[in-house]
Length: 218
Image (cartoon, rainbow, N blue to C red; front, side):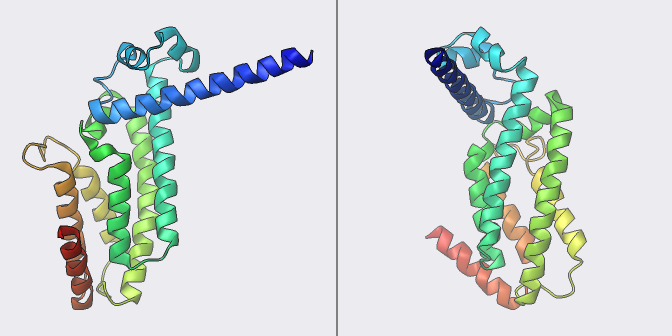
């Protein structure tokens, strides 16, 4: 009986490990190649396993996409919360968050947001609502601290600024508006963040911003 129990526990651990491996590999492929472009056959071939093994853990591709995006969202949200908990200079905080998100999204080489929106609209809409909530809390807190430190202008409409920032962050990911060959993702994100900050800083904040930009160029 004890041997059987040990065997079942080992079996469950292996199954959990395989599910995590599938999730990790699928997330990597989706971000690099696109949610539509990657098929279950592609994933199985890349991992050297059968499609049956994948379907043991995920009923279909939609279920896999949903778990991949949900898991990635949780990882990024936790990372953003950890950065915010450090209470750095507000401008430095925004650059740290941008850098962290870009690393986890692998520079969004395949316009994953556009593919997700087009082919998995329900998942995209749910994810967008979750992203808005997290970003809204983060950006509002960032602006309030910046105003207190007198690096952001005191007359800002905080709700408006935070929402227009979210709108911009999501809009620049539309490759139809910003084709990658003309607007490389990393440069695009840097330009948008600088555009956002220059619109809300005081002369004191502008000095901080310029120092960060110059240090990043070194």
